[in-house]
Length: 167
Image 1 (cartoon, rainbow, N blue to C red):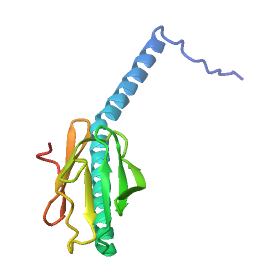
Image 2: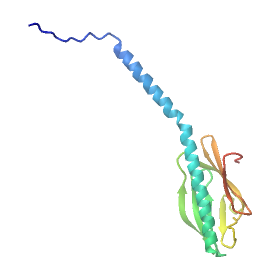
Image 3: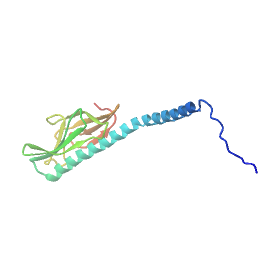
Image 4: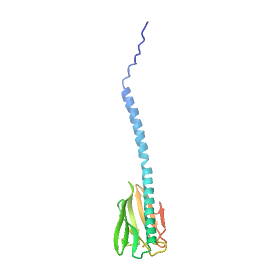
């Protein structure tokens, strides 16, 4: 009986370098793919922030309408240059922070101007039937090169979100 033994062919010199180049190529493709997702992540974060601010403005407006108290007002105070704003209640001249909200990562408040004093503040009083604000205005949210505006109309208090014409 003859024995057959399996032998492995000798490895060619440089095969390790070729394997390394293939692995680096795959890693480069994966990195390029992940980096191409960055604008999408910023866009999604910006939309989430716009929906969050829109909801908070409408909630403050609804609370003011429901209270029907001339001495009470509900509103938002935006900190320009940051990623935060405060939801506040004003009663008899004293202002109380109800909660502090933080925007999603990558999103900043770059502009906030309303007719109220101070300019980055919007209040809704309980005396208006439709919840008209103390003054109309705009807050601009920015993520990367994209902008999103949340506008409050002065007479009606309607709230709109737009991606064009932001200050």
